[in-house]
Image (cartoon, rainbow, N blue to C red; front, side, top):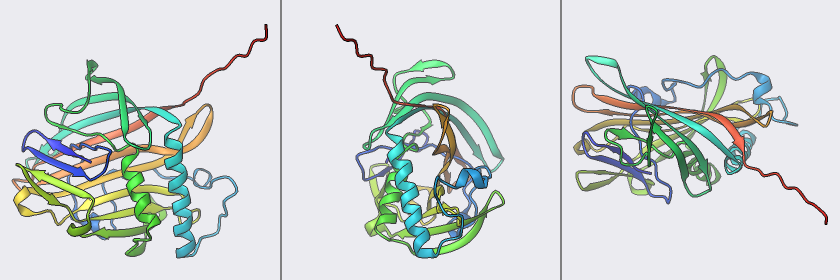
Length: 289
């Protein structure tokens, strides 16, 4: 994963074949690392949306809930290769004197995933065609569609769970499973002015305690090396019901990527929405001569 901002020459990358470049997303809140809600939480999930076909409605034990979460995350990840969707990225920039920020532009594209990386086509910046998202002036982002989920799934399968807590997400109960990466084993690398640092972070997985269905995954960094000039990084992807071929599927709905800097409360952010899902497919006609 890579995050870049031309304003400071900051590059954040995850050691993976996929690339994620991030602008920033909403003002950073250190409380999120303690299991509190991040800004821009996903919409309330109804019971009918949460319960997959054949799933029990009784609450699971912590161990069984973790197994169910892994099943849910695996199913979403497997589904990604079967879909293509529209991605809208609203880019913002703000500071201590303007915490709400100002909207810079909107980047739209068609995005797909193939177990290796996201692929973007039909890219536009404020309705003007672009060859690629990567390399835009200012902050830009790639990778929220599938890479974060894939890396989080690896952590869940490794049973690298440090704590389990109860919380709420838009008023609905949620179980929060957390895991931590220290700098010496972190897959998250940051490069600033030619210097490289591995970034310690907390990962969080939010799930329905009734079904185990994954609602959101987070990556939160609060202990960023001071010499980077970065105060903190938040990255969050939400999941919910999306319709394709007149059927409901559990898929990414939106994402937030935010970075705040040490100087003057400056921050930049991306608000990302996924919509208009379509399944890959083809019509085959067999004719006998």
